[in-house]
Amino acid sequence: MAIVHAGSTRVGWLSQVMTTDFCPWANRFVYWLKEPVGWFVLATAISVMVGLYFSPIGWTLAASLTAILVIGMAWPWVAVRVTRCGLHPETDAVHEGDSCRMVLSVRNRIPLPVWGLAIEGYLDRHMAGETNPTASLACVPPLCTAEFCIDVTPRLRGHYPVTRPQVTCSFPFGIWTARRELPDVNPLTVWPKCYSILGLFPVAGRTNADQGDGSRGGRSGDFVGVRSFRRGDSAKHVNWVASARSDSLVVTERGGPQSVDLDVFIDTSRGASRESLDRRIRVAASVLSSLHQVRVTTRVRLGDRWLTYRLDVRGRRQMLDALASVPVDGETCQPMIPAVSKASITVTGSADGEVAIRISDPQGGRRGGGKTREIVVAMDDDLGIALASLWQEVRDARSAA
Image 1: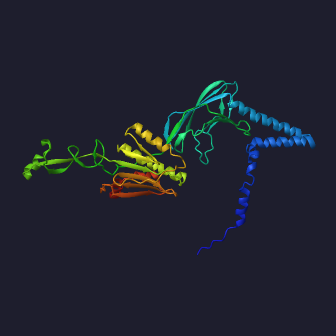
Image 2: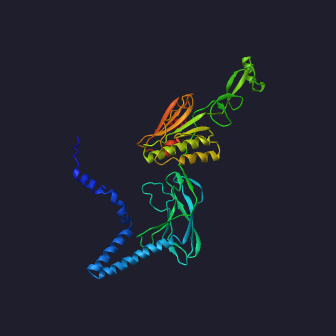
């Protein structure tokens, strides 16, 4: 039997004392110390006091610190105001994890080179660790207009920029950062990452269509079998060979493709981690893209919204734009109750990162795997591998192989 000793409460007590804000009302008076320039101002004031009451060397220190302060604050302030910047992505939409080239145009209006310019706030989405600038320039030549191509890789879906981007500069000492809003900027939409799903959607509908899956009886399509002649059948569909053998009129039965009346429910509620919600959105985007590719008409409930998309390129873009607009922390939405009489796909998730895909087929066909089946993708599972064999026919084919 394992024995676990009680941990020391002193460390937790000290940590609590060191991290507790006992005077929140005084924060506004000391926030200026968060910038290095605040400490330089404090050191200058102390040097002046030393020069007044103790030693003349204090004046030397105060003069040196003042010179550093003037240069460290004046040059960044000038740099962001004598330059005019613009940021334009070469494409207006890209998937998560795909590289995107952005063009940064800079115009320098003074006969001196400008160092240390950076663009901040374009690809930030209030995520931990995303404090790096979107673009940085070492030097801009004097009296010129230049364009720089920068490759970026967005990691989180959304419509960018979320806030107004800023031109920043902290050269040469980094003690103070001058900021100015970027006047010329084009937006970028980052769609959820889509994974390839092999095979076709295994649920067949009842409505004849030009494209689709199923074996609904009709006068066109693949050969299904034969049946007895019924009033209204065309003579050109009579199978004369089979009729001669049975001494009665026999008609060739064919099965045309069908389109299913499908509802897709996507759970975007709060309560799960951001990573769990992102995996859920990626699974939903992959499923919807697969259905769109095989031209299955769907009605999507995203949160509390019902959305319907056309089966063309514009409809696919609208679908991905709607998924990209889901808040990173989820949204408040009502419980989803699929209709019993309609085929549906429900994409939900748990707090630990699992994604559940529930497929309901009122027809209950053998090829569809039964009336209701559920596929669970664990947090540690690779989405690309798990979604590739999502449909039942692909898993059966691999098992047979």
